[in-house]
Length: 455
Image (spheres, rainbow, N blue to C red):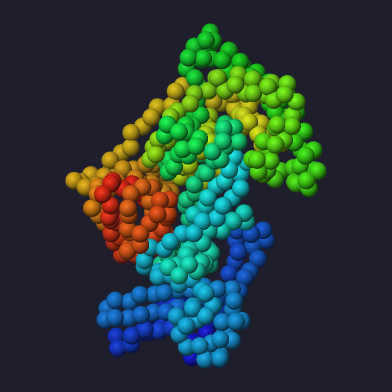
């Protein structure tokens, strides 16, 4: 019968069982029941979990497979009834099975936004949790699995995993355009993963990025430019609030919360019901406001580093991976929809802070270059760094073991990582206890991947 052990540090039990395993024994199977602190929820409630462990030993090579579930009573009953094997239990209860030393496929969670959605690969918070998924299609919240083997999986950084996410704006102008905002401390980096052909039929997307230098030269001083821009934004904000008040009445009629995202099709219907004079005035003032800003063209695979104090707004239909420092501050200068997260714009203060100069585009640092590959550093933050790997057709590259966890995402090409074929925008979590990983381009075109790891 499978031993069931109670211990609030389940990985310590795994360590003990591994140490006790003799060379003659071919494996071990046991379960650990433990309280799990849901630190990402208000009040940090405890949840009772059961971790199932399977150790396989072949000479000097040992592998560990884990499954974690909150169906504690059912599993214990099954074990008491004679269920004798790890695989038998996993199959009977559709439990995800994870190898602690192999790449783990990440399953995403979508977070609704006024302009579209964010797609989280490593999100652990009240709004949503990402999961790991196995080759049988079974999934497990990533926080649960980390709790069962924090050292092997995350090098004990399980509460500070870098947030890997995609910004997925709607493909429609205005409705899919993000806030025009700036940051004083937070640093952001975007990597373009897809450009919607219906929004950008010529293939190049865009980001609103800083200010139009020609319009800037129309003014005798930068102070005059700032005052004129502020006046244009405040003029637009006035009509924006008038329209949003009308839309709020519609929200109330439909029983919607005033800060709840509304489907773009619904917003368009409400917009079309406005008097034509109001629609025309809104478009006119929006154009006058936007003429002060610059628009930067974006193509698939492009990297955009956003300097502090540079206002920016990713445009509709341009999907990007976003990497950011863990500083959650921003100042909203303008938005062509209702801002749902705060009841004001920060334009007066932001106008005094914003950098008017055209942002300087830094070239990526080439870290490693060979006949068939190139590794470039996209960004280096205080706590993590991101690389872009380009692989020529029919070639491979080995990602060395570092004792730290890693995140890998395929952008383009035909890629196999750890024997798993990756689709575009699919991502893997690379455990800290992994061996060196071979990443192969099995196609006839170049492949591009992103790699992130703690520093």
